[in-house]
Length: 315
Image (cartoon, rainbow, N blue to C red):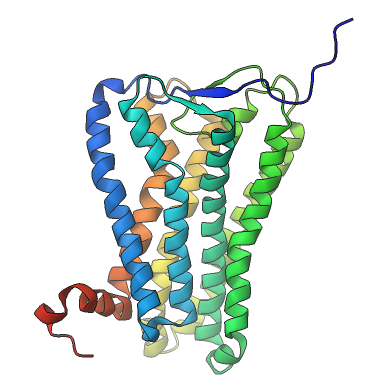
């Protein structure tokens, strides 16, 4: 009688096959990434330090924007350095442990985006609909609790998903993507992944439930804001960028989730790669730009940091 299979993976290294059909363009991709990633880091770091260094920006809304930018740096750090290395390497491999870490970093960052945008929607609701109570509710303690929620909830969900993945016995080692992804690893399992799938769909539904909650809250805000010119201005200035960020993150993650599970291999690999990377390409660069350029207070402080003498902005 054969001994029972141990409930652990014998795979030590995964092969990432997402670049196999596009390696002839690797120098173009490397050049683009070498320009894009530092630019993305620069934009996020600029907004972060602008908010940290100027006491005028030590308000809840700007603290949450700072958190959104920090999260953008955190998530992209799990992909771009490894991706640039793979573009120049002959073999595209990643260790089992490295794969789980990459999954944790990338997808906890995506979940943190949703949590942060949810908290920002609550903050805008209080500021516009309950202005007299705003400062009594949104205290430093409340801000701290909101930041903890933004990070701990995604970390908790991803920790459970990582534990569920690590218990699988795998019968393959090839991941058909540019990076490690939960469903791509789960598909390599020799046995049923029902538990993984159920918990994964719970997390997905929770995220999109947050998105629906935010959209509903904005319907309420729009009704409130159209009653006054000041309300409309406040909505356009602070809520429209937030709503745009939410749509961007939701669509990007929806692409990744749906294509990972239901996508066809007949689609060219380049198109598949772009769809898989959209939530690592667009939100991290767009968030600091729409908040840094659109919000007047942030834009003025950024200009003061870099062009103080030229633009003559007074202290």
